[in-house]
Length: 419
Image 1: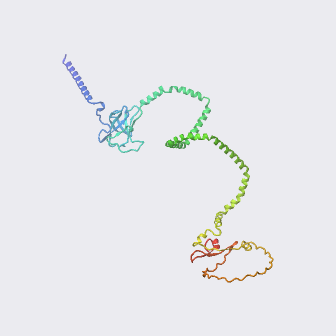
Image 2 (image 1 turned 30 degrees about the horizontal axis):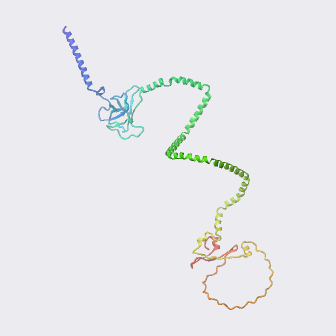
Image 3 (image 1 turned 45 degrees about the horizontal axis):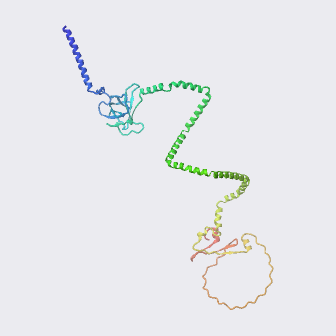
C-alpha cells in the first residue's frame, strides 16, 4: 500500500468519526428536550419587552401547536407558549404585549388562516354583553368564552354522509313523481301558488297582531298555571253541578217552553197594540214638549205649592221662637168674585118678614164685675192688607223680645224677604 493511499483512508476514517460525533451530540441535545417545539426560535410576536401571560381553556384545540400566532382584529400580537391537558379540556398559555388591552370578559376562538392554512387564536371583545374590566397577567378565559370554527374535514364528512347514506339516490324518483303529479294540473297549481302568496302576505301584514296574540296566550297560560289549584277544585265540583242540571232538566225544559210561549204572546200583543201605542205617544208628545219648555219653572212652583202661603225664604225672616199672623176670611161671594176679577152677582130682592111683637123680659139684679188689670198697649192696629182670593193676610209682631219687627206676609210672598 502506498503512502498516498494510506493518507486517503485515514482522512476518510477521520471524516466518518467526526460525522458520528456530530450525530451523537445532536441526539444528546435532542434527548434533553421534550420535543422540537422546545427549541428556542428567534423573533416572533411579543418576544421581548413588557409582556403578560393569560390562559384560555378549549374543549378541542385540533392541531394547534406552540409558537402559533395570537391575533387581535386580524393583527398578530402574541404567541402561543404552551399547550397542556387540564382534565378533559385543553389549556393554552399565550404571551401578549402590555400594549394590547383586552376586557376581562374577552372571548377566544380557534381559527384558520385559509382552507389549508395554519391555526391561530383570535382574541376579541364580547358581542353579546358589554365589555367589563381589563385582562391582566395570570387571568384565565373560561371554557364558556372560547370556541372554534368548523373544520374542512368535518364539512366534507357531513357531505359524504349526505351523498352516500342520505336520500340523494332518491332525488330522481322524487323528481319523476313530482312531474307525474304536476303534469296537467298547471292551472290549479298556479292558483294554489297565488292563494298561498296572498295567504303568506296577509300573515306578514298581521305579524304584529299574531305576535300580540301569542303573547296574550302566553300570559293566559301563565295565569292558568298560577291558578291551577282553583281550576282543579272547579273541575272536581263540576260533576256535582252537571248532576243538578241533569236532575232539573224537566223544569228547565218547561221554563224554556213557557218563555217561548210568553215571547209569542208578547209579540202578538205588541203587534196588535202597535197603532194605539203610537197614537198615545203622539198624543203625549205635546204634553212632554210643554213640560220640557217649562224648564225649571215647574219644580220651583212645587216649592211654593207645598208650603203655601209661605215660601222657603220665610224661614230666613223669622227672628225668634214664634211669629204672629192674623187672617180675615171673607166668605161673601160678591167679595170673593170681585177679588178673583169676576163681575158681581145680581142683587135679588128679599121680601120683608112680618113684625113680631116684643116679648117682656124680667129685670135682673146687677152683677158685680171684677176689676181687671190694665191691658198693655199693643200699639197701633195694623192696617188691613190686600186680599188674595177669600183670605186677607195682615202683619203682626214677631219674636218674643221687645224689639220685634213687623212683617207683611203679602210682601214676603211677593219679594221673598222682610217687608
